Image (tube, rainbow over all chains, first blue to last red; front, side):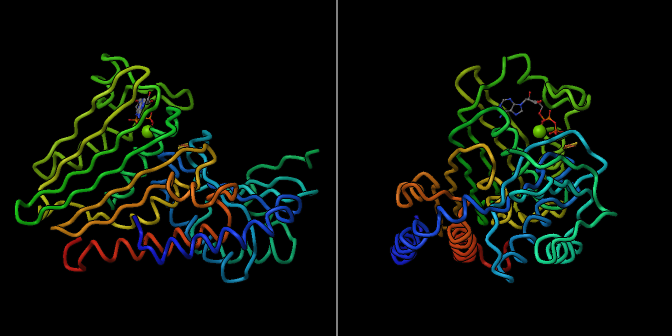
Length: 125
Length: 184
Ligand SMILES: Nc1ncnc2c1ncn2[C@@H]1O[C@H](COP(=O)(O)OP(=O)(O)OP(=O)(O)O)[C@@H](O)[C@H]1O
Ligand code: FES
Ligand SMILES: [Mg+2]
């Protein structure tokens, strides 16, 4: 297991996290990255890494998860962004170098990057 | 694929897809014996004897979105190119073990690559499961069990942004301590 000091960090982090957890669940942004074989081969892992990096850079607190294959091989890497009260948008062929634009436009400015959209689901709930 | 860690991610995704709640990833590097072993063991739904025998054939897949399954055949080919092999043991209802061996310094052996990225991609899966990762290289060792991390975290999820950053840096540090730069 990691060093004791690292585990101490984790315990401290738990306390910090518990305080803001409720806020996040209500106002949250959810980003999903496809990790099927085609996605992996097309660079989805690097795309996810780029997403985590941008989120950290701008201190955007979004929930990031991965899913298996969703059957759109040629459009991989696929990235899905869901925000409370907004339609859910699926972007296709998202390479790591596109991530900064995507994060800036979609998450910071609130503009959908039309030319990369491959799917759209109306607002839920 | 250009990195063995991408094959590993693909196999981890198979395990997740098979409903595993616990996955073990073991990586053993022995430079003296010129040997690399990768083991992925899960407690997923498992495969019938027949399926387990057939999965190295790309035309065998239970997926419905397309008619070829590439994951395991590609990984097997990567091992075989390096004087190694890929073996699959599976039991329905019990789980599956995938074992791949390589000649460590074989000229065609792809680097392990971004193992931290592979682990993060699997850990952040929408399907909740635990991964126990153990890596040894010439007497150095690193181990991380997300079940252990979860116990410390209580009700805070692994996907929490702060936890995510902790995981990323812990993995990066751990990997740096186990892998010497001239090795992989
Ligand atoms: N860990 C596992 N547990 C249970 N079944 C598995 C496991 N790994 C593979 N299988 C079975 O073997 C089949 C072939 O796997 P393989 O990774 O080669 O292709 P695939 O997952 O079907 O497609 P691809 O990986 O190309 O997206 C799978 O469809 C699945 O039925
Ligand atoms: S992995 Fe090919 S379509 Fe999803
Ligand atoms: Mg597969």
